[in-house]
Image (cartoon, rainbow, N blue to C red; front, top):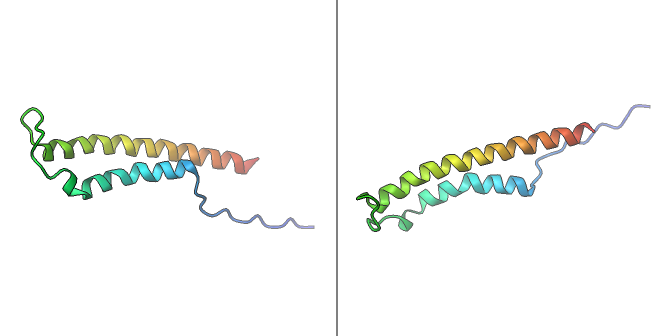
Length: 85
């Protein structure tokens, strides 16, 4: 007899994927919420808050994207490893 076809596994929401989503969404929320950083004080090394806040988010976004990428790679490896058994 033939084996029953395996049901295709669709997208699954896991805690790791929620963390990935938060890592990728946080910079957008921080930059689109202009009212939270549209001010000049406190200044840092003579640079108004508005500018150094945005520049800080460039670095934070890079770190969060790298974290999300690493988590995604680990999630994909675990899914492939679990499906092969």
